[in-house]
Structure formats: structure tokens, C-alpha cells
Length: 419
Image (cartoon, rainbow, N blue to C red; front, side):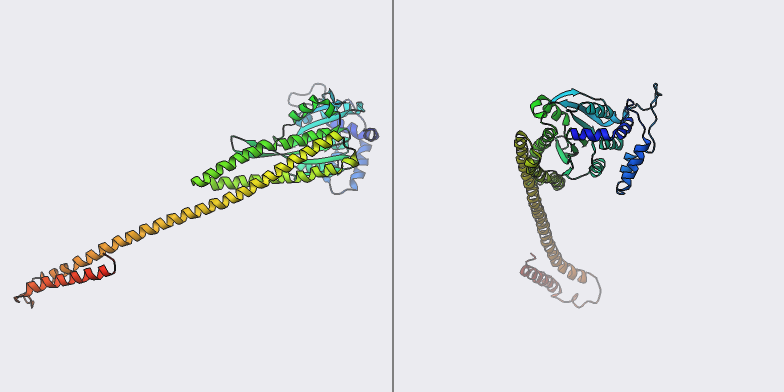
């Protein structure tokens, strides 16, 4: 912590400019020379134009008048907008609650043995850059915190640890999993949390730590443990909710619900996202445990972190099992749908066959009845000169001809199973 104090003292001018940017008019100073030196430094790194703007603002903002206009923003409006809570601690006990980032910076410099815990929710670029200048945060880490949409990871930049976590919560009403992103900067005497999303509830973590000062006085590493533990514990109700969803889906599959395929697909996508949140955590925690000896981590914290690692490993295995179960259920559902379609096709084919049989019967009897009708029609034309009209056996012959034709057709249709 003393090393960071020395660095803070050596860059007093830059801190003064930052406190002006965050609304603290108590520390004023010249910014021209500092801006030129920052430009020279940033000229060496052409990769981050955003950092050139950050460390070298075009001009210092004018001081706020004593009586601002009603429509003018308050001096600390940038801080109040996204600073959820900031507090300073000494020996595990809260000693002050600053209302802005500028007050936090000033009070932390006045507390050589203190620790700052700053919680931000969707902060502005200005706030992140002021934090970066005050605590020497690495540009790459700050850029990740600005852009969000990062995968879980663990990076160490000098004395600062940068952790990206993906928290999750289960929404009972919508029966879906909501994911949030959390970025954590852990330094020698500070912890900064940048939250993108509703989860996790870090106020509960802060209350828990403040209720156990013997753990909080272990420093920023203890706060990081508590945050990791909260994120991993938040996976438990999600796992329970997903398990219930899978049970319901299995019932719907065998009940033949036509909407179940869509639900399986949506839940499978959520499980893919859940895997992306939990799998990297296993490696991250093992990396932290591998550095216990190198960084002198407290033995009690080592036990806690091992416990968190066990929980996240168990959760990761459950999520893998859920995804495999959903894949199997989708296969079973496809098989059942295919069987149902085959049964419907078979029923249609049978109905068509029966219809064809009825048509055959009707056609056969129509043909049989058509034969006497044809003979009768011919002899009913009433022509004067027809050979059979004056024949003595003409009428019996016509009747016999009708009978022979009808019997012949009946025999033919019967042999072909049309009748």
C-alpha cells in the first residue's frame, strides 16, 4: 500500500485534474504540463485513442458557479449516476462513506492503511477513466470494462488483478435464465466492481463482509473471495430452476406438446451461455490457488477459495449434464414426432385404401347394372325393322343376354376381389 501512496504523491497534478473531473473543486492545480507529459506518454502507445482522450482531456472543465442554473447538471452528477456505493475500511470496519469518486480518492489518500471498495453499475467512460488514472489500471482492462460483453477471465497487471465474471439468476415468471456481467479490479488497497446487468446483488456481499470484520480486514483478496462466492452461490437457484424446466419438458415431450421443441431449443441456448459462464471459472480458481504461495494468501482465504472451486466444479458438471440431457430429450422428441407422423401417414393410407375398396365395389355394381340397361336401351329404340322384334324368342333372348352379361361381370369382379 505504501508503494501505491508513493505513486499517488508523484502524480499529484494528474490526480488533481481527475478530482476536478469528478466534481471535487477542493483540489485545483495546473493541468497544462501534466497534459503535455501524458500526451508524450500516450504517443508511445498508438493503440488506445480512448486513453489519449482520457489522460489528456482537451481542456479542464470550468469550475461550477456557486448558484448553478436549475437546468445545469450538479457537479457530481457523473458520479451519482452509476456509483452504487463507495466505502472506506480500516481493519475490517467501515470508517467513511464518500458520496462521489472524488471524495473517495481524497479520503483514501488521507487513510494510509485504508481500503476502498467502490461499486459501479454501468459507469460512464469518464468515471472509468478517472478510476484508471487514480489507481493505475491497465488500459486493456479498462477497455474491457467499458465495452463489456467479455468472457469470464482472470488477468494480472502488475499489482492489480482484473477478473471478469458472468453472474446468472433464474426468472420464475418467464422461466428463463438472465445473465449479467461483472468486472472486478483488485489492487493493494482497493476493490472496484463494475456491474453490467441486474445480477449479482453485491449489496448483500457488502453486508455479509461488514458483518464479519475479521474476514474483511484480510483485505481486497477477501472481498474478491466474497464476490466469487456470491456469484457461484447464485448459480444454485439457476440449477434448480433449470432442473425443474427439464422435468416439465420431459413430461411435455411424452404428452405430445407441439410447442416443446421450441422450449427445448431456447433452454439449450441458455445452457450454452451457462457453460460459458461456469467453465472458465474452474480454471480461474485453480489459477488463483496456484498463486497462494507466491502471493502469500491467507490460509483461511485459501480454504474459502478451495470451497468455492469445489462448488463451481460441481455446478459446471451439472450444467454439462443438463446440456447432454437436453440433447437426448431433443432426439427423443424428434423420434416421437417422426413416429407420430408415420402413424398419421399410415392412418391416411389405410383410409385411402378403404376408400378405394368402396369405390371398387360401387364401380363393379355400376358396371353390372349398366349391362341390362344397355341391352334394354338398344331394344327400346322402337325402330320398325329390327331382326329380333318379329322373332318369337326375341324377348327371352334379350333377358338371357342381360343375365349372361351381369353374371359374367359379377364373376370377373369377384375373382379380382372387387366385390
